[in-house]
Length: 231
Image: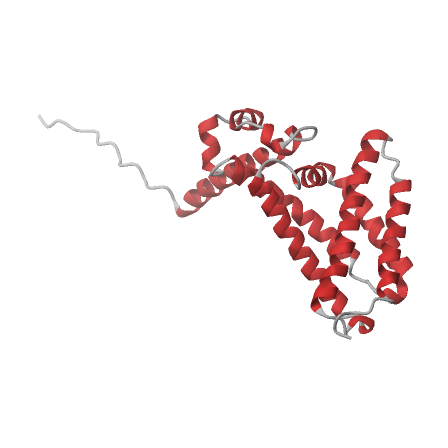
């Protein structure tokens, strides 16, 4: 008598679409965890320095075990520099919009619109700006260098914009960068003062705004009388 055997069918390999979906799902999860690490870092340093954070503390806040941290960042310094880069994108956008219509002959309206853009960005992205202002002179050298590098790039970009203004076409590169550096420093000081006003005066930054506008107008108008080294 013959004996029948029930042979189980071999498992089918996953279809290409299923494999893609699984890969995308893993990638999405990894992206969410990475973003959680960045977001929780900003939340943790809202009133303290980055140097005071520990890897274990950041990982716990993001809901992962400490060893999983290294799937996303090589070190705490790497995490900090990434926070700088993400935060600098906000500042870069702000400065780019603020200088879009820069013109010495129309200083007052240009300054008012530039400072208004800055105020809006600071209110909407307070954690990022607070991190940049605090860590610009903080205790982690990698973060300080990253911020300094980004700010020097901003100054060079602004100097290029200034060189396109007909009245400044004859200026030398050194003088253009010096003027740009003054403007960027005024804006950074405005950010720091706005953040302090938000903390101290319940967000009333009208005095800071008015003072920052006057500073920028003085810089721009003073440029009209400056005898550049190229002359």
